Length: 343
Length: 241
Image (tube, rainbow over all chains, first blue to last red; front, side):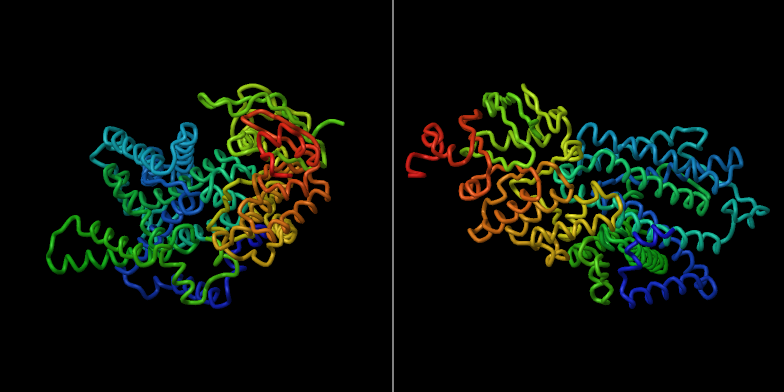
């Protein structure tokens, strides 16, 4: 614990104003269920989810420079493994999350290994990740035990509603679990970034050959990045499965899902610790507002949200190529002693 | 006396080009050894071979008594050989300090210890005051010294320097010479490739001259520059009067 504290530059390097703001925000979010209505809470839950999975992706891309465009694969694997263990064997998600992590981490490691073994890098590596997500989607479309294309459902059982230990509960439960996940991901990222592994990742992101000349085992560093990122993403999948109670291969593994989960870190600031959180706080409410507005207007435009996300992404990248957070942090005088210098 | 680095009759052919032809050299512990030669003589190929970027077609390389040819660059670094790149390759988006910490973490897994060691290294390279700057913001002379600092932070027993003086103004060259002199006096073995003859003459204990992939002369710098073969093939008859 003390080592965690010492190596987590997050808090130590944060100016007083930043600590106050972070503390205030956390207290506000902890208290939110007391005054917020169901609709606001549901949006906050979505924000936490996207902040969390965005953070997981950010570890791999933002810190280690490995572009994955198929991260929905790990969401889906985590979701299906935990949901199936629950439905078929009655194994609750708190336990089921472990095999879920295991499966996703293994697949993530295998993809990273293939990439290294056959020198598939950059955009080509991204294509490899898309391919894995796509053929997993197709496999699940035909996987009878998982419901195939018709979907897999976690049954609604009224008598189990209070069982928080089985992730069966109301909105409050998911709200606090989501908040804990998002906060935990921030702390984990900060710790990893300041760790030896974090330095190795950033070196390899900047210049692989130079990193290797400094004694860094590139294969090991890449595989660790992919494994940790996939494992984290799988936990998001478990959350997803038990929050929505229904899984469809096309929705869970689809490339659209993979893109959706990388938007928050890109908008917020790649490789930064708070970027994915800031990005999720910007994008999710905007998307929900758009949906609500369209509903009110009675417009039925299925692609509107995707188009809207695309336009938002383009305009933000145009105005703030480094993402919103680095600019916001400077504007609010929140840049840390060290974190300001090195993303 | 056993050599720290021994390169034995290494050859390398790229398609039709004989880049290196049975080159042999020995670098003793504590030496400051220079490799010179015109462009295309095979210096960088030899250098990359020692650093593990290319494997020799024939011949062998031993470091501290163990074969290292064919090992990957990261393993060679872990054995104790640090290197710089001719075209500097700083981690641009990282601070100067973080660049050096990456090197220091090789032998010191605890980040705070690595940071302390990085600070020591930065002081030796006159970069301490610039430690919070981004590497991308440095001038070329500073980047060259950062390149040395980063390699040095891995605590090598042998430091390979690829044209660290290239592109420096005379005052900066003198500064680099003084730094390398101090490192060598501290017991570090250095192998350098250099075009700047002033630096070679000032620093090297021994010099190897490559020409068309072959070693044409070897010895103390004063003797080598007067060697007729060297004068004619490389330096030009008028170069040293």
